Image 1 (spheres, rainbow, N blue to C red):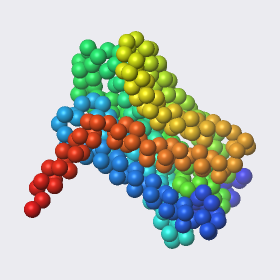
Image 2: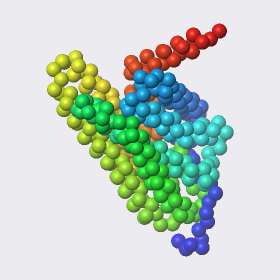
Image 3: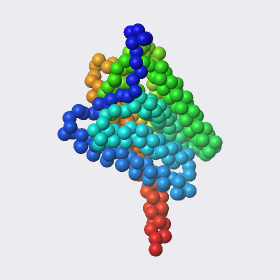
Image 4: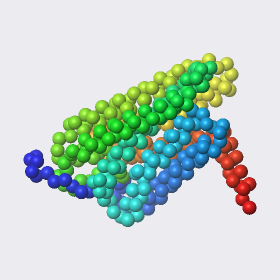
Length: 313
């Protein structure tokens, strides 16, 4: 198409999960409930770790960072969706859409890296327990989180700047409840070869590499657990690993399905439904899988609320 016929649009239309008006109150209530559970559950984790000095360890440091990310991750998508349903207005401005894309990519990549770092921490704690405090020192923990932020910020900035160069010819509809990056770069009338190449490269590198690291860490952990003589201890260790693996498994399976399944083989609504797993469901479940079932976290929360109750007049 000739460049002179291109016009830069000022807004997108988010079609959401359903166009049925009767389903909107149900969708609103469901997403509001999941959002509140996500925020409340992850805030409890952060509160427990910050209030109890016994939890100032690498494992809980990474857990509190993951909880903070989960709150940010859901807060860039769900509130906008809830406002759109409540006001019956599906429009999102071009600038807000690009902002949402940037932070969505940033926090999703940070989640990738943190899940990998947590798996590595678990691997060191179980397989190299005698050297754990030496290897997982505060400097290394801080560097791992800092490097994750830097890589995530730079890649998100690059992807967003490339998206900024695209030209959209007409008012564009996004068959999603937020500005999902893959859906957005399928809309322009300009050439998107570079955008698609960089997107698949980034997903393969920053998604595939952490996933391989997680699989390697847990394979070594399972192998080490196999040497435990106590059947009860072995069962407890395996059940803990299985629950911890459920989060990265559901996260990566749905991400790879959304980004690597050809558009012709599944509908946009099925893609949006799959995206719910890693954008909404996984952040909601993380506090229950990693933290709120943990006896140390529960003990820290009881101490905190007990002390607060004791200070009341």
